[in-house]
Image 1: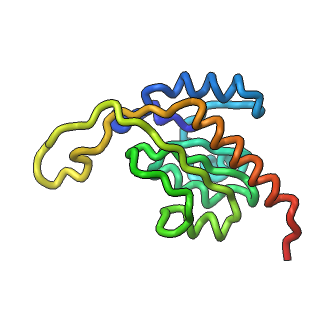
Image 2: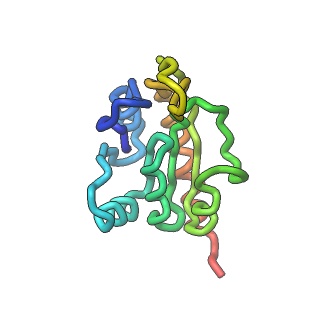
Length: 156
């Protein structure tokens, strides 16, 4: 799980609660990580995991390096309507090309920043958000099950 603890904007307020719920769920080993500084370390990290959980953002581009039938669970940290369809989604082409499973989990806005002047692209976006742990666990389980079914299909 990439918690974005290293940022000041769009912080995942209840990440500890979500980590505890994932660990308690019995889905397997759960760890928190930071995005490494080197390109090769980022590639190795995303290839190593069976499931990656992260908030929507630039770090998600590393999904390109995931293995086939692994899973990406993305937290909609802007709290936009959740749509698990591939149409129009940022990861759609990567999902098709690489063959990973993707699920999106909704969030709840806790604080929205005010106007900070003309040209600020983040005006009105959530500064802090939270995710219901039960929703996250449910999304991870669903992604893992779908990933297993992809693995069991024959590939031409």
